[in-house]
Length: 83
Image (tube, rainbow, N blue to C red; front, side):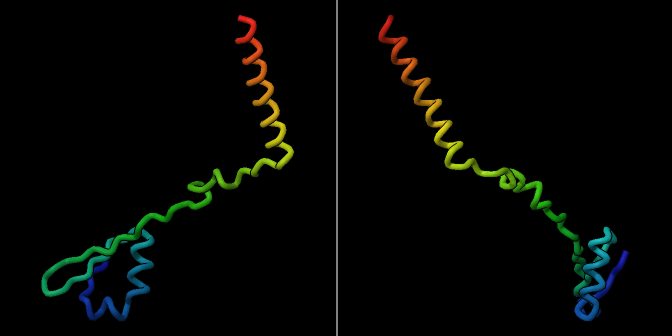
């Protein structure tokens, strides 16, 4: 555990942040009050936005999907007309 006062923390901030990143307890004191420096976990942006790594369908793929939907719709209309 590292405990320093505000004056020392100002001159050793990088060292204290590195210690917090490693998981060490870092306490800064000011007039008897204690403040803990805690490293916030980093977010794996690749995992968080992994869905963006999927390729976007091409125009031809969109047209093929639209044609299939239209064919299904027209088929359902024909079925309904025969009832």
